Image (cartoon, rainbow, N blue to C red; front, top):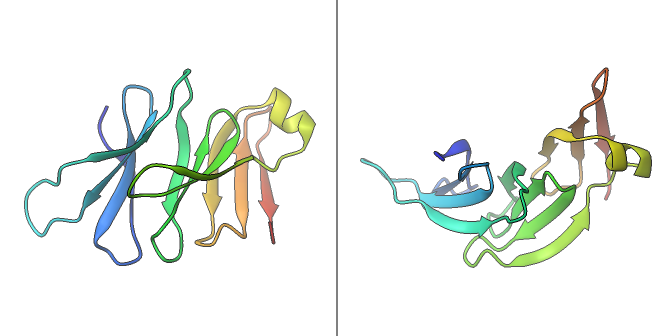
Amino acid sequence: SGCDRPSANPAASAFLCVGGMQDDVLFTAPIASGGEAALRTVRELGGGAKFIYARWNTTGNEIYAVTSQGRVLRLDPATGAVLREDPVPLDDEVSATRSILAAAFSDDAAVQAYSVSRKSSNLYLFRGL
C-alpha cells in the first residue's frame, strides 16, 4: 500500500503520493520537521483504475493526476473534489488500444508528455492545451 512517487507542493509545506493496494489512492501529508506525517486520503479511484501520475500545480491549490483509464483530473487538494476531468489528449487509435505507462506535466499543465505501451515506446509532447 505505501506511499510512492512523492511530490512536494511549491511551498514545501506538504507532499502528495500514490498508494493503496493497486496505486488507486492519492494521499497528502504535511512535511514534518521530525518523525512521520499522517497521510490523508485526497481521492480514491474505483473500478480497478489506478493513478499513473500526480503533481501539484504552480501555486499548490490544485493537483493534476492521470489515471489508467485515460483521464486527466484536476483535484482540490483539501477536499479531493474533481475540479475538471478531461480525456488524455492522445489520438483515438492510441488511446483505444494502448496502455499509459507514464506521464509528466509542466507545473501549469500546458505541456503534457505521455508514454504508452506498444512494441516500441513513443513519447508524445503537447503544448498549449
